[in-house]
Amino acid sequence: MKAGIYPDERVIKVDNYALGEFRTCPRKFQHRIEQNLVPGGFMADPHSVKIPDAPLLFGIAIHKALDAMFMQESLDIAQEEFLEAYQPVPEDARRTPGRGLRLLEAYWKRWRDDDKAYDTVTSELYFEFELGSMPVYGESWTVVYGGLVDKILSIYDLKDGESSPRLLCMDHKTSTWESQYLVPSFQLSNQFIGYVWATQQIPEYAQCNDFIVDVLLISPKNDSFFRSELNMSQEIIDEWKRGIIVTCQQILSMHRDEFFPMYGKDACTSWNRLCPYFDICGASHGFRDTVQNTQYSKLVWDTSDR
Ligand code: SF4
Image (cartoon, rainbow, N blue to C red; front, side, top):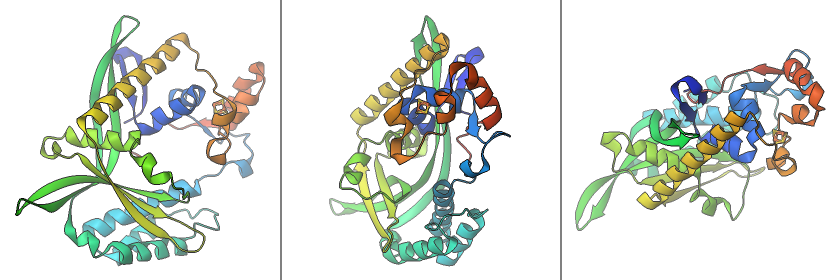
């Protein structure tokens, strides 16, 4: 799914990434999702353009490996998948191919026995569903929400002496950020609530309310692994849906006014990284088009690319 605004059809297509860009800074959404800009035009400083982005590529390769591990129940196949997906190998002292292989081996040892309780129902479930419609300046617009659920698992629970199957979504997260706030913050993750909502739109998975966040914490010395199980009630899902609709109304009103505000400073340096559009925003008004045309190129954000 190509995220963006489709005025002829009165449709706005979003995923968690596109919404995250908008909620961080509307101007960022404009550059990335409306204009499809990414750093790397013909005049860009080659040292400032990191392609591929090591943390992103490492996370993608680990996801591919874990898909293989869950589906094929084999560490060797998972490691082969990792090496194949981690190409071209970026320059990153922390995320070397050897590091990825060791991480997978440690993960396998940590969870191999526990995971025997689960059946993997499906892996990499791509979705694109209509979420709702809303009025924007007297016209009815439809919101389409897309994404990719890592896994759906089933487990047998003992209830009143009888065992009954229960479905769960699972998402793997590789992280280098360790904090006492990490686990509590999952409860309010828009991404995870959206995955449960999307899973419920598929009739055979309609009963799925539970979610496991599977964290691979990459530390300088010892990697660690933990999981957190969340239950998404209907109340939580309804509030999430309302939040998406309101956010899309805001996006469309800025689109109509042809003005997306710059949130500036804190947004420009969130996660201690400089926003990739800083060169455009920081240029004088008359010079912004030149910066845009020479230091950026076009790449559509497509939810199904991972
Ligand atoms: S540089 Fe700052 S103001 Fe400009 S898009 Fe990025 S976050 Fe927004």
